[in-house]
Image 1 (tube, rainbow, N blue to C red):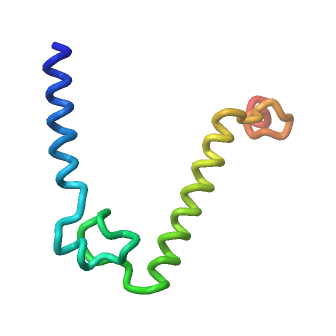
Image 2: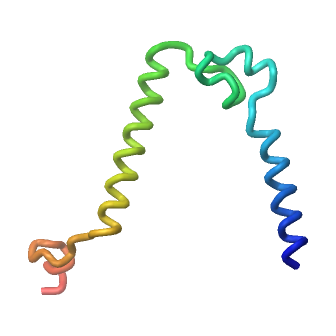
Length: 87
């Protein structure tokens, strides 16, 4: 059973790898920095880069704070909403 599962996972990953990279036409239309990442047209101007980097920063902040509050939720403070509801 383990061998069949390994073969199936390998086959799926192999098939996904060919789909995940851009084709030759898309490579030539992409800017140098994003050349082999996606299909389709690349960013058309500075506003597109601004939107992309703003979204990346927002995702990074969200990830940081979600991990921070999952690790140390600080629910033992008297002003926490859980304590207000319980009282």
